[in-house]
Image 1 (cartoon, helix red, strand yellow):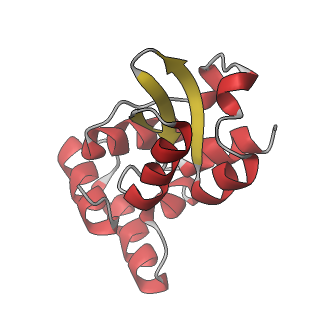
Image 2: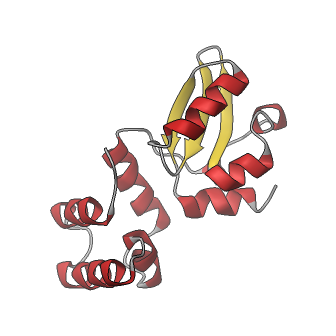
Length: 141
């Protein structure tokens, strides 16, 4: 599923996790300014990063992960270059016999994910992490 402002707004309304009036205000601002609704949810303190992450992971039908809660081996982390990770917001955090597990803020970015799968020569397991969480994690590298 493509996650955009409208379907995120609809999902949040359906879940009743944010006051409908405040959510509508955030949505209208995002649409008027051509920005992501998520940014206004943060700016207006309407939802936490974890709440947004879990909801969006559900919308993408993939598991949610917080990179700051993972024990990541350098060997695994270094399978994807730091420059690529920061630009594409994709981080490798677990490697096992089933493949490489990566966190991304865009599970629909098939071009970047296919590139990673070819580069590492193993299947990928995709998890969702917010762009905020990935950027914060990458800033510590």
